[in-house]
Length: 104
Image (cartoon, rainbow, N blue to C red):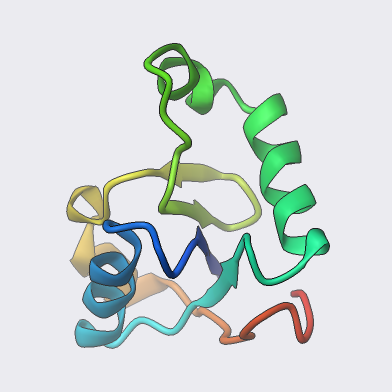
């Protein structure tokens, strides 16, 4: 089964719509606000520093939020509109953990 992890920030304009979209279609997810604590920020920065999906994001001077991580990095998506909703509904099991209270 797969998990969905969303890195975001409550002040970033695209993060709330991504969370709302996932909730509206019935997908449970882990949401980590990178400004809530240093653990969330470091976890996001490690991903951003190491993953090739961020190359174009960084070259354009962008941060890369929201960052939707599927199944521990199997896939990384920056635009919730690019998610395959039917695939998510049929095959993915997700967990909810808010504000760093635990990790999968």
